[in-house]
Image (cartoon, rainbow, N blue to C red):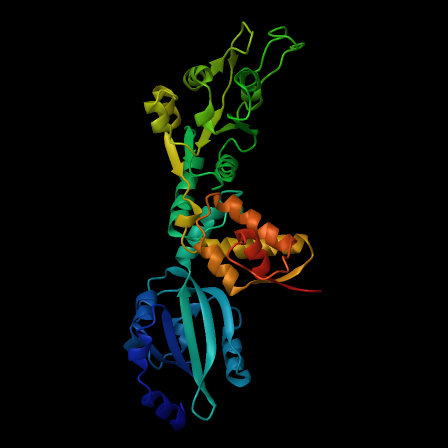
Length: 396
């Protein structure tokens, strides 16, 4: 090490500064020997700073980055920085995935006297990604807030069992996407996933849709109809808005859960099925039970496993993430170059409580990408107009 380099490293309070960084940090001289490293890197590698000082970095930070020695030397000459993912092998022979950021360290004259290495342990991040992407379809469900991360942790457990699942949450929180993701990650994934809205059809028609009917069961029944439960055999049936299911059909559904069989409408022969049931509701089933509008025994049969989806207003930091994602999606579909939202629009959007949750936010972003309202904002304008004004578009 040259005397100028020694003088430079002596004049700065290295250790005190580096120990305040919550990631691994090392300083190398021009010969790629360790001059200093912080306490976090000591814990990460198993080597103390006293042991590492003066030792070539290759012996302390054993990494799998190809030609890293050559790349590091080139940084000293070019003044550029390197950002790359790799692994290190610790003193205890444990492999840890690391994201390396390496940049030249210059003296007051601008001369490169060494390298600054920033090592971020990404093992937890990779572990989360593996759990998340083991569920096909979850990659389309965005969220980094603590409540969403808790949900992503629980979903693999739900996917790898065959018990009934009850998904709760406000309208627009994505209950149908979660149900399908659980199905796709389960052993039933090669079989049908059938969605039924229990509040969308009259009782008589809903019974026929769910359980099928025999020929001649009623006027217009000119042939046997299998029903959705039979079509979902060996797969999953997703009963959304389960709180709207009529009481008479609740009895029949309970029979399916208990006996795995049922009579079609007008039929005399039972049909056996092997179906997993996932139910969802935005209503409180416990309150419906108290009011006598939902069977208590059915509630407990459905509520074996439960997953609650947080409202968007409870997902700290996710609103901006989703706004940017949806705007990119819609601008791409429309072949528009959209730079983003104005600060005023962001302030409005992040303060809004979103009663329609992610569905409402998506609609707002789509409106903004499709329509530009060329008028000045006023207090009387609605939220959608405010967003459209706030979006900045760059013409191609």
